[in-house]
Length: 131
Length: 131
DNA sequence: GCCGGAATGTTATAGCATTACATTGCCGTG
DNA sequence: CACGGCAATGTAATGCTATAACATTCCGGC
Ligand SMILES: [Zn+2]
Ligand SMILES: [Zn+2]
Ligand SMILES: [Zn+2]
Ligand SMILES: [Zn+2]
Image 1: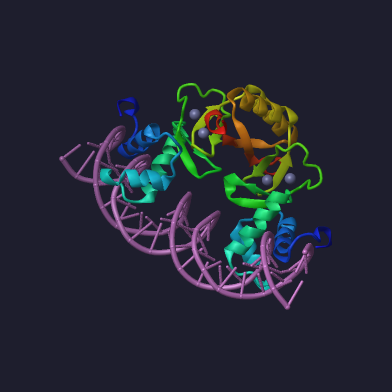
Image 2: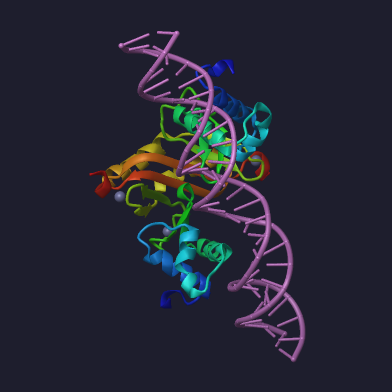
């Protein structure tokens, strides 16, 4: 809460939930946990999430229709983030790679493709779960 | 048809639709176009798509919940495919990059992450639509 | 106080995907 | 040929994900 005083009530509630979660959460799972706080409709969650995504405080995992709090909210200069999602325990690692970013930017340049947003998600098993 | 004699009837119907489409199609859009061929339920489409994905004859675009026929069905050695999706005209370009693949594989090695599947999707505007 | 924009609340609906179960067709074995 | 096993198919029902449309409230600037 105190860390995000510029957020509205709903946005704070949603972000708090995401930060406390150990794994990605679907919008409906978030909603279920916020019923006691007075939230009742999916749209309330989706609206809060939209803002949090805009601010870079949360991310959407396209391949599993779920959301996570940003792991590095203060150092996102790169602009291209990759996620590794463990399909067994649900843990998500967030990382970025300059060279990957440059390669994709190079491809886009050559093709004349104007990039809006990039999704990079690796699914598999984390070290603990692969053992 | 003649090109995919090892496919079942439903699989052939679905793949034909995807190959004739100029843009990605949702499962329900495919279904709508195959009603005249006797297909009636979403599950029939999803089952055919599952097999086509397994065989590498089609791809799923996670970021838009849609499917495309593979553009290079015969040269997929790389194993890591990226897609550029134009948000205006819907055109999809399929490409791969060895260096990107190596970088991601390197990260996974260092982290002990066992990769199962990788999604890479760039959204934006193609050259024609960006002009 | 008044206005305008942003956020919120509520209901309904649209769009995507799977579960469960019954049926059919095909192929190899006896 | 009869039978058993297995993959594909058909059908209905359900669940999950996301947005449309509209009314209301909140809050800062003038
Ligand atoms: Zn982040
Ligand atoms: Zn794990
Ligand atoms: Zn392909
Ligand atoms: Zn285009």
